[in-house]
Image 1 (cartoon, rainbow, N blue to C red):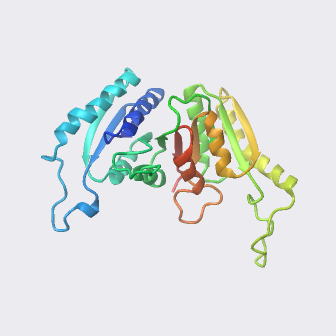
Image 2 (tube, rainbow, N blue to C red):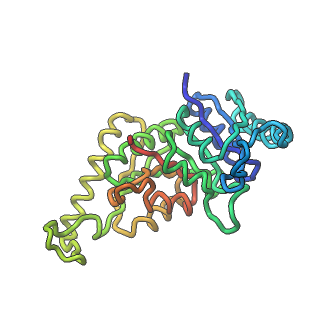
Image 3 (cartoon, helix red, strand yellow):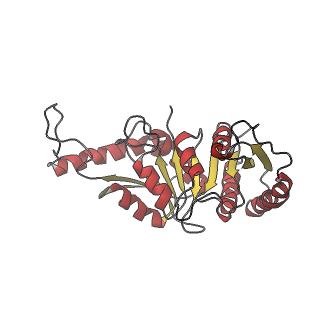
Length: 293
């Protein structure tokens, strides 16, 4: 049986929009949909000498009958025929969704939740899942009902291979073209590799670097283009600042797919700056795909 698509619901408008998207994603995959609500206080609000908070007797019934029932109704309307289950799980949202992701094909969350601070662009649950989740994470954001190609952010990293595979599979599921965009600049490669190199060294052979980045793009995409021959692929090489270029390209995409980390990631950093920029500012939904640990 196909692993379920899971969606986190907290009663916010953002999470209910995520339900619509998650239901359609479940239908595309032929998978069931699991609607999850995490019920629990943050650690800082739990009495030090008190027992863990129990779902029983703390107003869960209105939640089950209210927000979760509304979410299930929306799911059936968005994707008739999809099997839907709903569950209230005792625990912190971060921990609950991370645990749920271990047996899911895709996790979907809204970009903001009820617990979001005013002015905060992205909820803590989304950031945590992007870095620690055990399945791809889709954050629903940007313009409503986006159309266009699936946009793949190609970074050439070993860990990014999972994102490439996911992007091709998603384009095939949607019957959409794929734009494989690799953005480069003169910081894409070190000009000098000796231990005594100046800190401000920069690449000066622009043409050599452009050719190298084109090879990286071609070598990344070619095997998957053979594996998904029905997907129309545009290989796009662009010299620019990476984050602004990807954000601008997301204006014309229905989905952006990116790895959790790229070639420039620091050791131990679980979520790269490009991934974070897209999660906060992209003009369409973003899926972050982690490589193998």
